[in-house]
Amino acid sequence: MATRTVVVERVIRASPERVWEALTDLEGTERVLSGVERIEVLTEGGFGVGTRWRETRRMLGKAATEELYVTASEPPERFVVEADSQGTHYVSEFALVTAGPEATTVRMTFSAVPPGGFMGLLAKLLGGLGVKAVSRAIAKDLDDVATTVENRSS
Image (cartoon, rainbow, N blue to C red; front, side):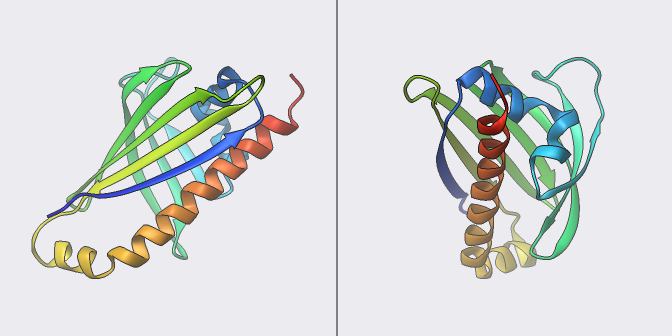
């Protein structure tokens, strides 16, 4: 089954360090991302490879809880978060690039490898709707991060 990939970019008027802090502050996620209803951090220590949490968010009108884990962390430039749900493997890569003084381009690349069988067929049939919904959700998350860091005093 083919991998589905969505890429969303957003320029945020803040340094990469401030954007990184907003993106990786798991305890603050519920305050920053309007689509997230609840975060339960499962590991101790700061954000890095091996960090795990459960995230409940509303998608297509339904609440869904997934366990996510960090597989790469290169502050303040890049991190990768992965999850497995109902046979599908998800990979979210966040890349932060300086876009000028006090500006950062955030590129979020989301990939999903769907399962085979009936669920894979269903995912393929609903793929176009799913891609649009995921694109909108990612754009909203990045807008929420921008609002948070751009309105926070330095």
